Length: 159
Image 1: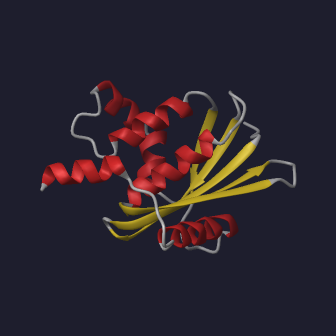
Image 2: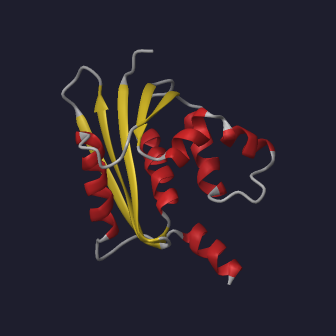
Image 3: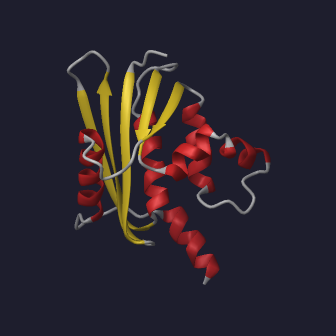
C-alpha cells in the first residue's frame, strides 16, 4: 500500500508509574510537511503513553480513510494490533485488560482510516523515532502536566 501519512510515535515514563509523556511526528508522504505533538502526564505508565501517542496521531488526521503507516518502537502496541489481540480483547469486553479505556478509544479512530503498523528498534539512531523520544521525555518533565484520570482512578481502586 502507498501511504498518505507516516506517523512516528513514542512514549516515556519516569518510574512506571510516574510522570510520563508521549511524542508524535507526522509526515505527509511526498510533501515537505511535518507536524509534532506532545503532552505530559503526572502519573501514568510507559505502555499508556506508547498507545496514547498512536491514538493522538490518528486523531489529528483531518480526513477519513487516510492511508497511514504508524511506526513505533512499542512491541506492546504493534503486536496488539498486528496480531489482532486487541480484537479478541474487544470481543471479551476488555475483561481484566489493562489500558482498556485507551484501547477502546484506539479502535474508534483506527477504524476510520486504513492503518498499517511497523515496529522499529528504539534508541537505534532512527531520526524520527529519536525525535519522538525527545518530545516524550520533554513532555514528561514539564512543570505543568495533565492528569491521566482513568489511570489514577483505576490505580486507587487497587489500594
